[in-house]
Image (cartoon, rainbow, N blue to C red; front, top):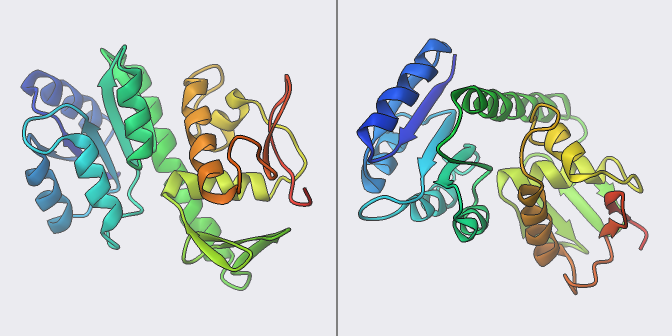
Length: 237
């Protein structure tokens, strides 16, 4: 059972989603406004936040940014609810630190699958960090990944990452010189079932990582695109 914070100002969506999540055995906290959501999260830190982007007052993007700025809440995964055709919303959500998004209207079966995947990934990350107590870093070329601070250092300079950026970077650094398609990364990193999820999610995160660790994001040295094969991490570029 997980504690999930559901943030949406549409009562019918809150009622339906709360019912679905409780059927899964989760504790569900709710909020209809951004400031209310932040207050609830600080009082009762959740394991997952499901966050609508469009809300009165401060919107979901601002809420996510504030979560990422709080050391006690910054590692909580965030699943954004977005407009079906609002591509700009999805890009903003990724830039704001979201971990996944689900376009409205959505199928409740897909909602369950996304929630399970995010919670599994969080558990796996915690377990990996615990098992890696003796081995605190992953070093690959000029890049060093610190499993405890959850940051990457490039030639000694710290690069702060969101939880999903860290998980994606960790996966690629521990599989150097191996090409992965967007669909494989959605399964391996996000935990999506086969043939589900949107490749644009991966493209968005690769763009963000390149902006953080590459000297020239348009001509990357490390996070490269292998034609017709996907993405490949090349530490000795």
